[in-house]
Length: 252
Ligand code: ADE
Image (cartoon, rainbow, N blue to C red; front, side, top):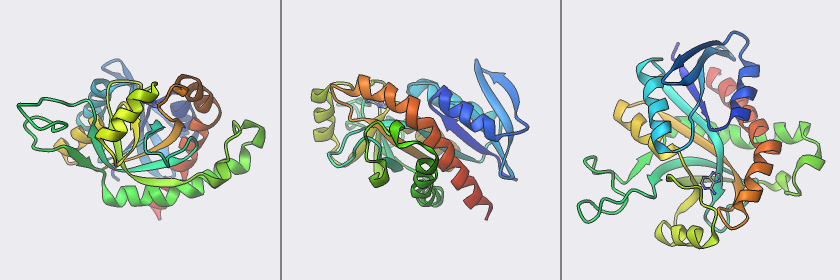
């Protein structure tokens, strides 16, 4: 059976995942706790990515080299960048870019030196499965989450978007910066701090990667307020719901 890595960005998400794994065993490597166990008949390895591109790349490399994972699925939150991507929406990545990669004039802006690549693709089949699971998971979550905890968001109308996710080593919390990113990468849907690094590692090792991010904030002047509220109430519940649906689907 091929091992699947379940990579989360936040403790709350990992805790919710571990509740679903009855037989998990912990191994510590590079200061990270890797939890090997089963969920819906799949052999899974659950771990926190940690925050930022280098931390995420180390986690991904360890998952592949030490734990032999053959597929990787990331869940977390992101800031909405494109004007139509609102708080509470869901983004399934189809491509990843490092928005802060700039070795110009030696290499073109955003190109990862010596790879000739600017954008890294998500795995098509795994992303398709995630996109099928995503709206079902939203319904599952809303069925058990009292409306008083919806943070005044219209979650029953949450939209699913698919496309480019931009990663960089910055929490984007200023409207000016978010607007500059939108001008620079007009098709980027959301911004976060890990997935393009995972994508580069997965590309090097030929390991399929898919990622889903709920939108916790608009990467603007209110981001520092919206982000923690969203994580506490919604993010981990959604992550576990989407993984639950995905793993059932992958067994079918
Ligand atoms: N993750 C969630 N919101 C974010 C933001 N505004 N910037 C970077 N990463 C994020």
